[in-house]
Image 1: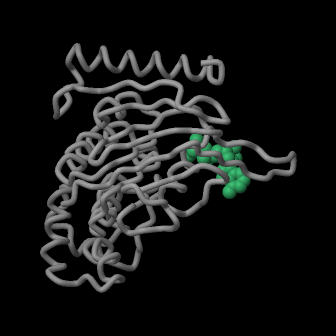
Image 2 (image 1 turned 180 degrees about the vertical axis):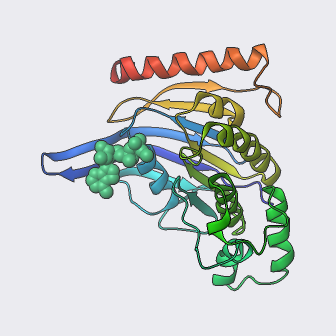
Image 3 (image 1 turned 120 degrees about the horizontal axis):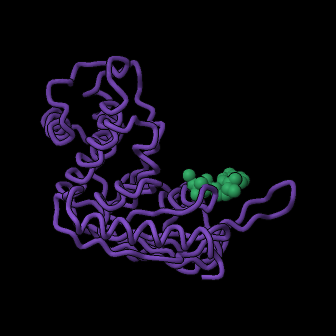
Amino acid sequence: MSHSGSLSLAQATKSYPTAAGQIAVFRRLDLDIAPGEVLCLMGPSGCGKSTLLRILAGLERLDEGIASFDGGPIEGPDPRRSLVFQDFALFPWLSVADNVAFGPRARGRVEDLERRVADLLELVGLSGFERATPRSLSGGMAQRVALARALANDPEVLLLDEPLGALDVQTRLELQDAVARILRASGVTALVVTHDFDEAVVLADRVVVLGPRPARVVREVAVTLPRPRDRASLEFERVRARVVAATSEAFTRGRAA
Ligand code: ADP
Ligand code: MG
């Protein structure tokens, strides 16, 4: 798969009108994501993480500043940039395979589709579940299907908004390792919003911490640990501690930082 897929926000400013007037979600925020980089985005609730993802997906516009993809301005949705939500919605009347095939079929990309779907289901660890219906799947399995469905569009960028937030702890641990492997194998650029420190250290090349609204990047932690990441290692624990410290600092000092 492709290794292009850089993203950038330059002096990004966004506000929403409310009954109490405009609220500034972020103001002059700068963020660059390199092709193939996995960036985890953390920050307090309501600081604008989902808004930032929707802007990069092309579903919303900035008030000021520039959002770009591979050096060109983002002007609308594009199958090369795929957004996956926490409350993934699979089509309940379609089989697992047909859910995964949905995007390519809708765009007429049917050549070799059956094999591509089988490859994707193998990648997410669901070989043999082609004919299963979403109703029969656990939450973790359904989220694996949602990932396969996003990857079926052969995206250069995956935008994951708290993708594992709705899962129980055990399933979440398993899926963190699976997602890390899938991101590596597919070579996509990924921006993952998470509140989970372990998840950030398992997945990320870099963790970016946003401050309270109006958000800016207040801290960054590079994660250079070898993959697959070993949660039991002392190095893992050290990096995790740095992410925790960066986050609490961002939460308490925020704008002053
Ligand atoms: P996060 O994902 O970091 O929790 P969001 O991006 O969802 O934050 O929201 C940032 C702020 O913008 C919140 O205060 C939220 O209430 C507000 N907001 C988000 N979407 C809209 C919208 N469509 N209209 C008005 N306000 C919104
Ligand atoms: Mg959100």
